Image (cartoon, rainbow, N blue to C red; front, side, top):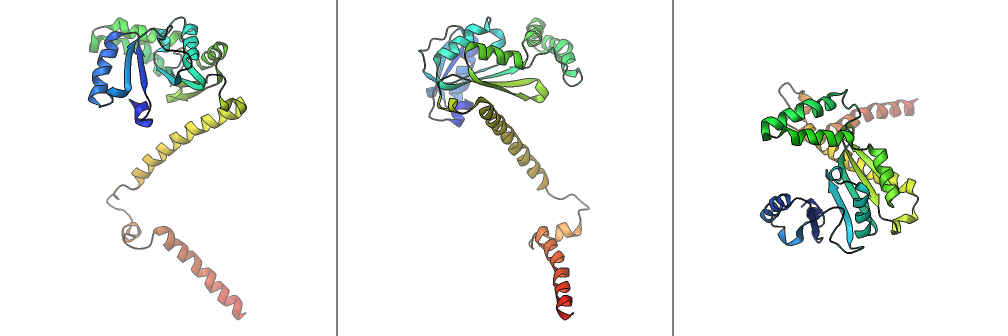
Length: 251
């Protein structure tokens, strides 16, 4: 649904191994009025029911951990992607690293299964989730897997202190392959960071433009309807310069 929001003319093949997931997703997308451009299909990630070189992009979020062996899924992604098309994997980082001074690891081991038992009555499912996160390879190992599978321009973007990673890999044969991998990776990472900084700047701007609290300075209150504080400051600073120039002329 997010892909269609950003690229309204595209068509999305929504593949999942679990039929109940597709049924729930189908009802959701129909409510949003995007049913005509999303095609749900029950399929195995190691055997995609798609022709060669037919997809402009492929994404998988929090699912590659559940496909073994992963190499078979990589081979299928590579087969169906057009030359130069991207594979984007959103996945938890390995739980073997200490994050937030071990607080995140404690959450995985103790808190998550406990909450799962209280909320869903199935602590085993949440214990399984924690175990798969722990046993998952770190970002460098996963990048090496993608390179060995035949992908190019592989890089990752850490999120939430490394709890989550966005892994990006490109099918060989694209036009962008003319650029060096180092410069391409640098450009992509810079673009992601720039997008994040813009979002943060917008939030900060909203906070700064909030209504002034009681006890605000008179200068701030009086500036409404008049010149901006920056302009008034510049005028005050320029006055001494004029005075100085007159003295210099007289002398």
